[in-house]
Amino acid sequence: MDSREKYLGEFEHVVLLALIRLNDGAYGAAIRQLLHDQIGRDVAIGALYSTLERMEKKGLVISRLGEATAERGGRPKRYFTVTATGQTALKRARNAMDKMWQGVSVCSVGNV
Amino acid sequence: MENNNLVHEMPGLYYWLLCKVIPEHQRDFALGDLQEEFHGRSQQNHDQARQWIRTQTFRAVGIWLEMAIKSTGLIQCLVFGFAILSLPIIYLLVIWLSNMDETSPVIWQQLIAGEMHKIIFQSEFWAESLGIPFSARDWHMFVNTESLLWTFLSITLLYLRQHRMTTHQLALVGSLMMFAPYILGLLIIEMLQPAARKIGPLLAFMLFCVFYMAIPLVVLVFRHKQQKMDTESVR
Image (cartoon, rainbow over all chains, first blue to last red; front, side, top):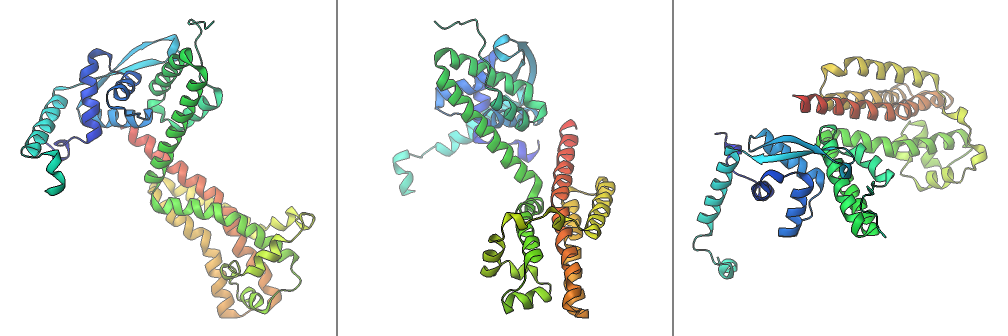
């Protein structure tokens, strides 16, 4: 595997988790809403799509076109799904974080 | 009472701005998402929804600017910045030169040496040029055939050769062509020491080449970059 694909950025990590949580309903507005509700992060739509497209190029997610509704001005949704590669990257990121957190207490961080 | 069946369209100005700054390949989905959220928020509180879409638009413009600066690189930004700065300065230099009867000895020495870049740092220049009334500013002052010809030839050459160059090279070569008359003029004055009355046309050529070329060069460079980005996104 290419070395740059081994590690997820923090935002990529969060977005991948959002996609898994939303399951089949992961499109731009829903992802933004979830990130806002869960972690209080108000993401610009351009930044979100740039990240999703970057992850799609890396093979971490795939997208498909969805329905167009009147509330959307007749524009289609673009649904995103995490691929097997994306899931592997997530597990790797979690393992790395778990290992790094071992033996670390937040109270003692300042003393390390 | 609020009609829930009514679709709340986002304000036209924000829609127009968003269309301009969101990349074409993302536009349909991103605008759809924003429209959907705007509609949902408008049903709760229309004023807050307008405030929200305004914030989203400014953020989209911010991202677009950031991307433009990152992708166009330092040289292109310098060309853009120089063009923005140079136009009003050259405008003032031209009306000042066209209306000047006498000036301080220091400025006069710099003038006959062709050192316009030094004159703009003299406070007398700014005081004198800004004090010239609008009635003394004629558009004929801004016509210089030789510079127009140089600009036309340079821009045509750059336009024809741009496909063989990177944006960085285009900006660099364009800047050299824009400044060449100025540098050449300085060298001619330095080496030949022409009489003061012969320096006027040379100064005009030195200044107007920059004046005429700045905007076309910026447009050429930014269009070139846009074309390259579009080609890369298609791949």
